[in-house]
Image (cartoon, one colour):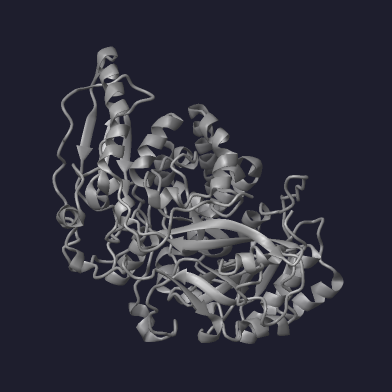
Length: 622
């Protein structure tokens, strides 16, 4: 796998020059003149509504000048624009600070950014929003998506391998096929509704943990996670789902039973192996739907808990939104066909990794049924989602829902020996494990996604030991069961999505969330490779690049080649004074490497992992 090459990191403040922008504009102006001479007049109605995207929770905006008051719709377009029609749609320019603007063209409505529906919206209204979303060509949707995702913060963070392997399918997806995909999703939920599957029970909810495993390796990893959970004091029951062709060995069945875990065969899903695909991600959606738990935490077999997980169910974000998702290293491309399928404008946010999922089935069974439906045609959807991981997020977006996020974005963990891959690679951080946090930003899951594939022997003291992550202040430790936990801020995806340089995202948020949102815009990750002895090793490394002066969205709003002082004035006019955010730390070192020996949660983790029978070695990358 070729490494993803990054822009230079740290400290600098590169800014696009005026000459480059003029070179880009000249052919566009010439093309516009050609349209004018060839096209027939059409009426285009363009409305701008200066209002914030509807909130999905009852979180009031902080009392600062960042709150934008609603204004009467004002048309900024001339009465008539001469356009030829598809593939060229004259989308209205986005408004500052994510204020809603709507373009109406040929009977279709294009809201930017795409708003959610209220939490109590009916299924019929959600399906109506999906089915009535605009249909247009790949080129038009990419143009529309570039309003929110056509910036370097996104382009530096795209998984280029997935994009390269999937681009042809994205471009060839027809409007008729998009319509069929939407109708197929709607039909699945209409059928479930007729069968009464969405009738909520008045009985007390049942909580538990769900795993999927079948072969000896995955079952052994699940047993290690369960042993650790029981040592932390977690008493929640567990269910372990497997394919009918992969029944665990009797000794494993006995061990799982002793750990309060029930082993179940997933129904209606077969293991489908081929030379090009050996993993079985498509079991996950069916397992979550078939689980007996109402509120559940799903864990991959290699997503190892670092502490008790029961407090996650008590967090304010989960209680308000009924779901918490954890981010991956990457962002979606503006060209990904998923935005056409969902009828949603591209969101500048990190994709999801599904090694751990916290969800309330009573509130979101519809989304899980969509995931189950999509996974039945995994050869198609995995070109969209790069595996199963983002289908859960896509299902929520299809239904215009939102989800909670943890208190810190993903970090990467590695061994302590900087020369583990040889002297030539000394100093390169080999991230072989995802480190995921709880709602307060404290380590919660050690997801050994790449580590489990490295061949060779590992031992306690030589497996983990360091985390590379975005440098953010840690909040004071508070028990999720204490009264003070009720006053904590519930961070949703919209408090981070589409954030600008001041950290202003789709929803207003306190200063510490805005600082996080602003700094996350500079994160970018790349693969690199080496050898540990004779074993091939694939790693990730996350860097931070100052995103301010390479942000095309802001640069295109300005005329001339302005310096930093001149640029600050229009920013304050658009979004309020920067003092409302405070110093976001752009001039500081944005990345940090934290030794596990200095972390109260992780300092004993590695020893505990091996004590309960953990094994980190794998069978190599294949």
